[in-house]
Image 1 (tube, rainbow, N blue to C red):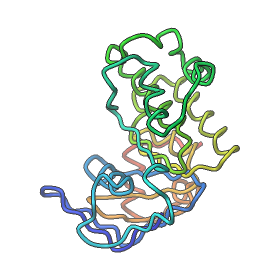
Image 2 (cartoon, rainbow, N blue to C red):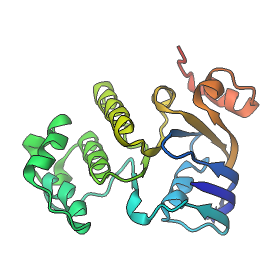
Image 3 (cartoon, rainbow, N blue to C red):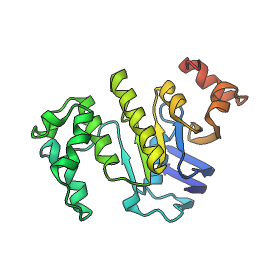
Image 4 (cartoon, rainbow, N blue to C red):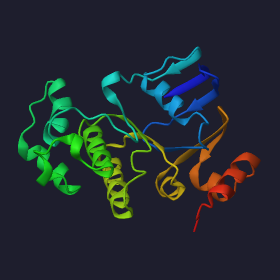
Length: 228
C-alpha cells in the first residue's frame, strides 16, 4: 500500500502524510504519542475514512482482503462461536466446528463458545477480535492496540501466532501499540508519527536502536524502551 500527499482533517486535528510505503508481506510498527494520528491513519488505510486530499494506492487489494481490529472491538450480540463464524458465512464459506475449534482452543475460548460474547472480559474480547480477523485469512491486517490489555503470556501467544502466519503466507501487518517492546520484537519496519505528521520511516532495528531523529529519540527515551 502506498500513500502520497495525504491530508485529513478530523475536528481540530490534521493528519499529514507526504509519503508512506507499506511493503507487502512485512510487519509494520506504527508508533507515536497519544493523539498523534495513528488510528486516523489506520482508518484511512482501511477505507473507513477518506482523505481530504492525496492518493491511497492499495495496489490491487480489495476491501475483503483488508481487516482491522481495535482496542475495544465491536462484537455481535450473540455467542462467541457465532462471532467467529458469521464473517466467514458472509463470504460464502460454510465453516465446520472442527475448523473453528483449534482457533478458539488455542487462546482458551473453546469452553466459552456458547457464552454470550458481550459477557467476556476485556482481554477475552480482544482475543476473539484477533481470531475473527485472522481466520478470514486477509492479506492486510491492522491491529490497533488490540493486544494492549492482554497478559504477557497471551501477548506471546499472539506474537507466535503472527510469526506462524508469516511463515505460511506473508501477510502485511500494521501493528499499533503503546507496548514498544512488542513493536520492537515484531516489526520489520517502523513508522513514527508526531502531532499529525509522519516524521520518519525505516528498518525497525536501525530506527529503534540508533536513531538520529530528535523527536523519535525523545519519544523512545520517554517511553523507556528496553532494546536489549
